[in-house]
Image (cartoon, rainbow, N blue to C red; front, side):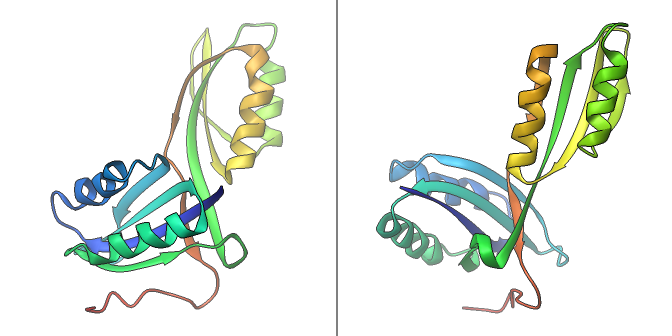
Length: 167
């Protein structure tokens, strides 16, 4: 079993995300991560899906996704040829004794504090998943109150780009 990241360029229409994610569910594949948003062309959206499966299953999923009507292009975002990022909002329990220490750790990870109260600090961190995981692991002893993660998103490196052309 291997982790694959798939970028799917689709028409920006209601129901497209449901049809794409439903295809995974019908075949019994769990989606590890899913993010979606408009591209530079407002009529087109990019869906980024991470899934863990074997190579044959991934090829089968890809072929099935390509057959969907509103799908313009499907390609794998391989780790060597792509950049991945995610965003996480993490609310951490603080008190007067550990606040300075937590702020120092936030700075080391180049994260940003976006909300402060007497009992918590909310941090936004962006980067690859290993950075987010490492930050959460260090914050665990202080007490993580809430986490919201965007899911993985990515682009191919360099000049490789999508055409958004008709199939």
